[in-house]
Length: 238
Ligand SMILES: NC(=O)c1ccc[n+]([C@@H]2O[C@H](COP(=O)([O-])OP(=O)(O)OC[C@H]3O[C@@H](n4cnc5c(N)ncnc54)[C@H](OP(=O)(O)O)[C@@H]3O)[C@@H](O)[C@H]2O)c1
Image (cartoon, rainbow, N blue to C red; front, top):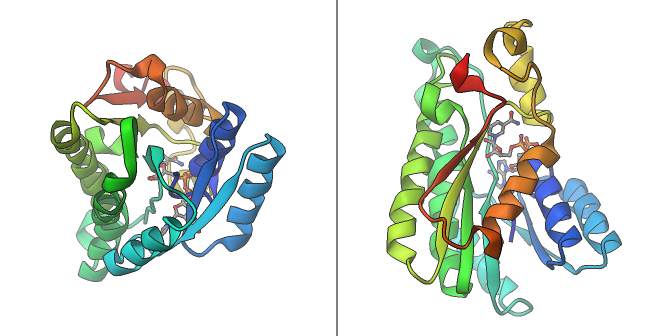
């Protein structure tokens, strides 16, 4: 079950899961066409796709959508909390409604969905949260997003404690990745950012993040829980 499956990293994660032999629940908010495109990729890999539509900010809508899903899906092996949104606004200028909206999408929403889906998770299952390098570095032009992602790193640890030993919970913290969100973020940044800040001198491709998410969900990562994996092209060493 993958949130944010209508675009970017979430869409690619759903496709890679299918390629590795999983049927996938595709969660999306507004972008039905994007979710349908992902479903075609899942089906092209020979796997089943179900849709699950909700606004991740709304706990009631989530509970209803998950309850409808249980008519066709009886158990979940891996839950990927990938839906997210960023806004570029200097810290001093962030209005309270924008602060609340970004915290709702990136932190409160994943918590609501985790609570709703936890009873469906099968023994030996995994939850993967998707944070960001900004959770560690902070961000002067998207402080709400960075704070929410730092919260998600910590929520990962609490959930790992709460759900052990039945379910593993880990976090993937990507650096800038070439998706609609990534392109919007880089448009507001120093054009020389990659040379100055990234050892690998480039941004990530969505597949380079998606493969880590799928690996973390797999039995190959069976002894890892409560961890945050940083995939950021060497951002911390620059
Ligand atoms: N791209 C980067 O540079 C980067 C770097 C670090 C971390 N990340 C994280 O990686 C994750 C995926 O990002 P991406 O780059 O793939 O972004 P993206 O291409 O913009 O996709 C965002 C996804 O989140 C969903 N979403 C947003 N608001 C929602 C809401 N209110 N309710 C339900 N779904 C909602 C969107 O669904 P709909 O459009 O259908 O509403 C979409 O599927 C995010 O958590 C992001 O913070 C991205």
